[in-house]
Length: 101
Image 1 (tube, rainbow, N blue to C red):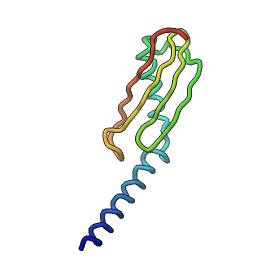
Image 2: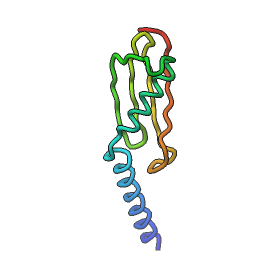
Image 3: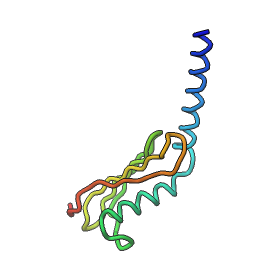
Image 4: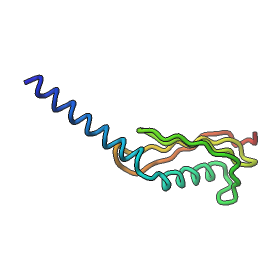
């Protein structure tokens, strides 16, 4: 009985990992990158007038992380996470110094 429960648990966990990989790594992330850029611009306080100097991004199973250098506004880090690991809307938060580099 314990073995059967362990097998079902392992199979369920495997399927959830596959779903997380598909939803967070294989699907096009352009909308999330656009949301992250807008979050960085809003945090910097320049809105659509911001000029981006550089960008570096990483995408993982649990979050998307973007590093933005905004001209005259400094370096901003934006982390976007889903409400749930496999589903839900992304919510982005920005941290950084509002000082030029």
